[in-house]
Image (cartoon, rainbow, N blue to C red; front, top):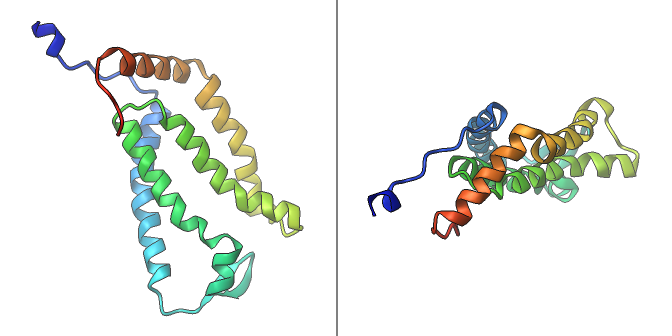
Length: 156
């Protein structure tokens, strides 16, 4: 019976995921502070696409995504820390959210190659890394199996 109560050991997390966990914590805090400073700023001038715009125009053109990114990054760091299988889906969602302005710019003809090309290139790389790289697939296979076999319900 003593073995049944023994906590399972942590799975060896791939280095890039470990770095992503630390980066997500730092980035979520920094993005959260940036969002709060924008929301509570008395400044009524914002920049979008290299042009000066009003606060209302800034948020109507995608500035609202600034609120979503800190939440996603916080969820990613928490999920990686707790070794949850859903984290890779959340990481892809975060990258999709970051690519949305690039796609909109591409469709509207306001695409800024220097700002947005990296995001468009990195999304397929992220998907490959999370869903096809052997070490990462193996890691998530073990994490997923342990969540289903340890008898615990992981609804966090």
